[in-house]
Length: 261
Image 1 (tube, rainbow, N blue to C red):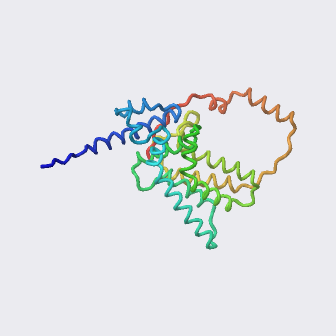
Image 2: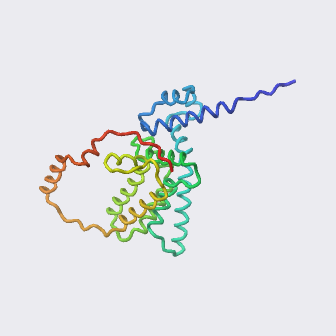
Image 3: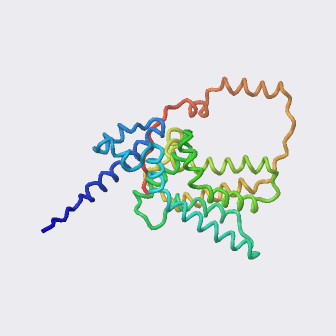
């Protein structure tokens, strides 16, 4: 009689999940360069060899971390942007705020998922957007390539008669707003009295979309030439200021809380 050997799949899958969870947690606290594989294994309480068994490298591990949590965001954004493209190509007028909402709402609101999951998704997205390591830049650029091209193409079409340079820098402000709110929305409570422990993310999404739409639709800048002396004087006086903006630049980084959606 031949005995069938049953492999302990569940235990292995649990270890893999714990490894991914630990990698995500440490990345959100320390960034890619500050997250060490040994620390991940220790936090997950698994063998260090699991990395080689499943992913082969640290970069591929984090590709799996981002894919697990952020693929639904990417797919939702792409679906909404594709619908707007179809409507525009059919001759329908598309409002700028609708383009912004298609990009903001899948992350900010994360409809249909648990509030804790939504909060963790926002945090991971924000930290991944701003992480300076080449590995994360490569992964995120590849992961959101189609979304990014579609979003900024649509945004350009609905932004009116802006010059290329002015559109570029306004688009940078849009991207910066996404990242800061997702990853660090509680940081300004050091300077502004606001309770962000309980947040209505639908309301936040509406506020941010309206504000960014107003900025993108503002009249093009008419720049006045400034002398080199005036520019130098301005830099000197700013460097000696000690107001709130100075305090913000020099304040230590506080670990962001995971804010429930």
